[in-house]
Length: 597
View 1 (spheres, rainbow, N blue to C red):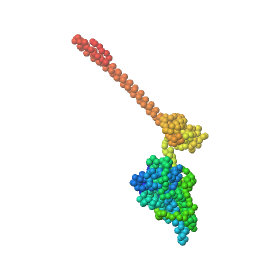
View 2 (view 1 turned 180 degrees about the horizontal axis):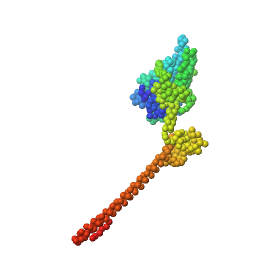
View 3 (view 1 turned 30 degrees about the vertical axis):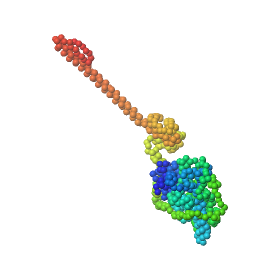
View 4 (view 1 turned 30 degrees about the horizontal axis):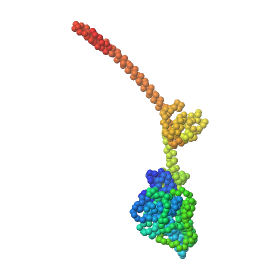
């Protein structure tokens, strides 16, 4: 079954790697895959614990509301089996108002799941009567476990398979109610359950011949919203009543101990021990090591996966405490003092074979190898803190071997690894590094910081050179204003050429935790600047020499130009003397003057 087909699934993009679902899942049916906590259907019991505790809403229930609307469009008669816990969920609504609102959706009729509960109690009373009349002494030591809660049934079949034979061979109240409805209105009707339980979706998947689908109270609210129906504004008519008949004592089923209260009026129950256990962890603790051979009479156990009963189911929104919810239910319940004439109406028998989850075993060498991988070298290293979601480090190691977990889930291991990496970086970076808190008290630093800024004459009487944690950063740096500004502005700051004493620094200050922790990398650029000055001086010297050379060249060129001019004038003069007999005016132009002869 794919992730989306199962009643519960994970939206991978919403998963925040908090492992809260792993910590709270009673059967550890979570596999970490691509950094997301995915549900493993074969291991899951659909109790909905992960759905309730997920802070990121990454765990979601399968949306069957579109299917419900499609059923109505098909033209078939559709009936609703309404869980009795609607009383606490739709607080303030009258019975007629909720029925009328549902009927306005197009539903043919609304029945109480509590009627199916009464059918279950009646069948259990018959089973107890047969045990009481039996001559077999072994029957007097029988353990009987209720099958009203599908999540509890799934848990026992998968994780307490040796107790699966004790599951009472009758349908749940919901499936019993479905049989009653089909017996009355025909086998071709469609039935939708509305209640607080996710595991009821499993019942719909496993018994499509009885139950078409299961919706939550939230789904029903959404359906009302889609159709613009406000139940509180409806004035019910005489036709807005539960079909078949109104339930009496069966209304108590959604509270812890309610099922037992419906059995007490039966005479048969007086020769049996009646007990209640709610919560998967409690079921494990109470049933796992129970020795049936020590029983002296039949023991009936009302088994519920949710603490407090169905009124505390995963799909409830009422934030009242459990006691108030139970009182609200009991106020609507009618308990007869004695029941004599009630007999089963329909056959609700069902078998619950074990479906044991095969847990792979691992040798000690393999477990130890994995423990070393996550930094657990000795027994003392095994903190068993539960941060990974598993109660012990060894169970976490087994989950790693099974491919259900990742090493990064170990909080202590990741913390130590991060610390080692940070320390390695602090040691290896050649520049001074310091990390301080909002009070500018030193949290971490490296040796280069001490080497650069420690002054025996100033610090020796105040601090120990071996450990400066907690020291005031202002006692070492003159430019702590950069650290304060970074904390205040919540941004990184870079300053070049920060002077302290006779040194020059390049400083980068960065935020680690907003307004809480700040760090700084301080590069000593004194020698680099000195080299720059030396290079500049050399450049100036070369420039001066070049200028002198240019000037010398210019002087030489000037002398040559003067000699050239003298020579040309001499030639012109000689030429003029030879031409005196021609009576022509001769104009001689030089670069300096124009003369006429």
